[in-house]
Image (tube, rainbow, N blue to C red; front, side, top):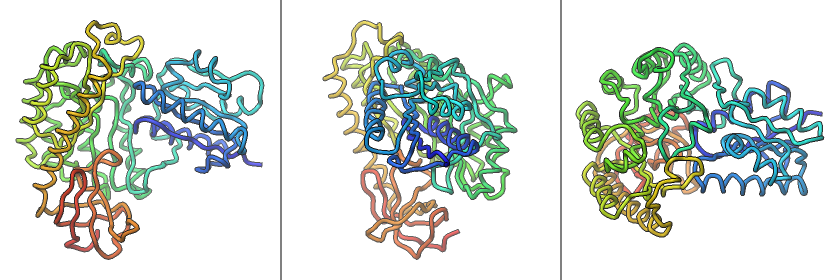
Length: 445
């Protein structure tokens, strides 16, 4: 009888790709894949260990799913991913409900690990060097909609920001060959994918480790030659690794979304230095000016961390002023999480939790107001929209070039059954803090 396996993926899109590869490997090994947790005999949780809230979500999910070992069909519960990579011994000791602990470097071995865990006996612990990197030959079952797919161009990180544990969890930066990425995207497009989202811990660093130079611009050029690929979206771009070639490739190429996710984390030079971030405030402003000059309609998303040790009220106010000056289209705010083993954890002048929380809300309020103003300016514009589905109230919804899945808003509209995965032109008639409303002015393509 075929064993049913379910995978729960937590955290970022990079983690999701690993989960999809695990699903593909298990499917190839003749396990039956199920999305119903109460029907799975084996449950795998691919965890996030980036910050405290993500770690707590991972533990809570594990404990909740452990109930299926008492009430459902589950016989084996496996904790995989970033949390396992960092806290192998603690998790093995403190979570008797878990039958296997699997690090980020063991994705390709998941079928054998499941088999070993199913056989009973001692808890399986497989956590070694986090150097795994999938390629175009890796089996993969996508969990995203059929028209959209994430493609991980590299894994790991060499930036070593003082607050971040990613190098420990994911290893050193390592790029995939151009040919491997191109082959994967061609295969995805043959399966009906219209939008590929290129991701890495530092996407703009792509290629430097294997080619000796930044190669994201060349990758974008090569992918744009693939027939029937409609959108190429770039996420997680480190600000100091932009080349003029990349900006030019984005500006002139109609397939590249005029959208960038550039995590900046702060604007104060002293805080940036304490974070071990490259570049200074003026460098950031210069980059944004170059991007907006080349692409006046570009949508810029960023993220900021408030409450790093040493962030005074003056430095935080400087961040609020910077947000108002640059007028980002999208932004996320995170409170600093004191991660054990990071340089920032040992710094003096730690900011009290209540101060961090208060600054978070002040920054979010400023960004919400800015988002509303930006959206109001889009009333009357016509946007190309990738159709995603239909609400119960009858409105269709989708995303424009300025909206990445799961993190940005939606464009709602009325029209005749365009169908998910098609593209329509929508004239914007109303705007809200995060979403837009409009009307279709052409037939779907």
